Image 1 (cartoon, rainbow, N blue to C red):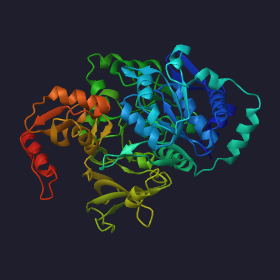
Image 2 (cartoon, helix red, strand yellow; image 1 turned 90 degrees about the horizontal axis):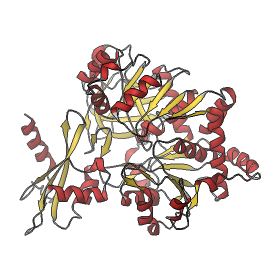
Image 3 (cartoon, one colour; image 1 turned 60 degrees about the vertical axis):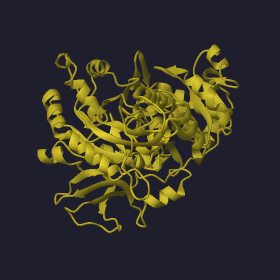
Image 4 (cartoon, rainbow, N blue to C red; image 1 turned 135 degrees about the horizontal axis):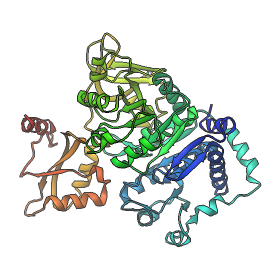
Length: 524
């Protein structure tokens, strides 16, 4: 089946069931499908073709979900753009993806979407249409933009065109482009197809035992697989209810878990820690929660104990990547306790895992190597990056994750660490080369190196080592302000350390191993 066919199935079989809850808005499956069709017809009016890319610069609001599903009905790919991005990052996402249309809100939190899109519009020649969800005054602030209401104005003749377009869509059409980064620092866009997402969610549902009578909380960003796939599509696949929050605010999450009788929640470890830190945590009734997933970062054994103690359930620990459509291994509640505390579980249905040597030979049980994955959930490849795609797949179709681990005699997978330099700050992936590229653009910075260091709440935080240009003076605040102008806030280093010189390799590169060893001594 195709992604949108699940929506149409439930709109017929469960038309009155709550599909999406957002604040006071309660949207049935029938209304969900009607809203998606209106956007799809509007995009047809704009000339959107099968294979086009559509930017969705929208926070965790129902309009994001409607736009996402509308893309799938047209054979187009949705390109989520997070509100956290700086203008330069928005430009890169929309430009590299070749987005021809962007549907956007005007602002969220402290992020002015209109100012950012106006700042980069002239550098995006392929962006034909900008659709603004806002007032006429807001629309007028972006030259040439059209209003969301105009997009939704129905043309009776487009119903047949939409029906014909849906018949053209195939399982291997790209449905979603979610940007990630590699150690080069340049974001890459894994192409996730209808087939990838359907097979991923089928395996996730089969492995977890989630029923067709669940209410799932979504408080994680929609530009992550955790939001766009593991939340939005897994709920749609099984005809359940998605309860959306703008963002993670501990008190709001706890209140929503109680009031909406949430049965499934997925959080990164830092979020669970912050929830448990709330002084009134025990006053909330969380008895409805049956499935608590912890993924997106290493899960400390003591946190697993804390989840069971405070919530009365054994969590599911998961591991996955954007390239695999989501978490493709999970522990199960029935697994031995020591396996839940020390492993990332076993592969989902339809997923094969091999541990490979640097020579790309399979390692025996118990021996460490790189974790590789094969299955229907694994991406089609990186958009416009055949070189990067070739690097991460072998001739047998296994994807090389860049993470090191081993499989024990019981078939449980142990993760040892990341082969790449990425660190995970509160569930957000941060790639040091990307941050370093920004730092060295500062006129007072000569050398820069960024590393992750352990943090009891966020999991990891970022530290920048900087060598100033000779004859200049620069402070930590100046560096952080500069970074905030060019990077999402979570990528801005938490610590800035100034040095006269950094250790260098014979080739003149920063010798990060020595810096890591230095940090280990500090922690000891």
